[in-house]
Length: 269
Image (cartoon, rainbow, N blue to C red; front, side):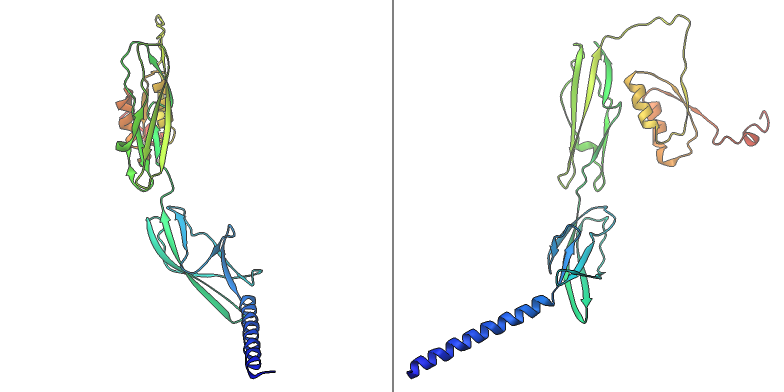
């Protein structure tokens, strides 16, 4: 065998040996691998990004596997304010039989919740034929932007001179592009006059106001009924509805704050 052929053979054998060595090293490296995964099975690697919904309350659970089969505990470090839009750095770490691995992950808190539109008067209402239509109004709030009532757009129209059903559509978007849409059906009808004679019914409600007051107001609007609310003002969260009762044409009167008869009815005074 010539010297040149011997040289080529030596080089070939060296290359084969190197490939075998690399393969062996890769095999052992892979056999000693710690991987991180989300609950949905999606893998998480170093410098990857996880999106979390604003106000979700907790980070997605990240677990670790040794050689893709043995579950191991994960420790988390880094502060994330889930109630504040932004990007945060979090480190996930795991160890198994002396082997350790940590990855740095970008946690992006994003707004995924669309605004909520509340239709005053309800999503269905009757309107008297020939009476100029006035929209009862609406409010819109967003979990991040707050009051977005001014961003609501209304499409559709009510021909109050023609009996029939009409649809009004209310749409609003928040700063993150989340959109909400609700509809209201207005039934333009002929008002039926009824002569009650001497019969009169007075509706009164011993009302907080509380969690059901808004729905009650909408139902009363639907049938164009005016009532008297005896309020306690015992629930600060709903205090604004006292003014709303008056604004919608109802009578607001005072109810005792409690039902403690021994106190309320101690004397005539």
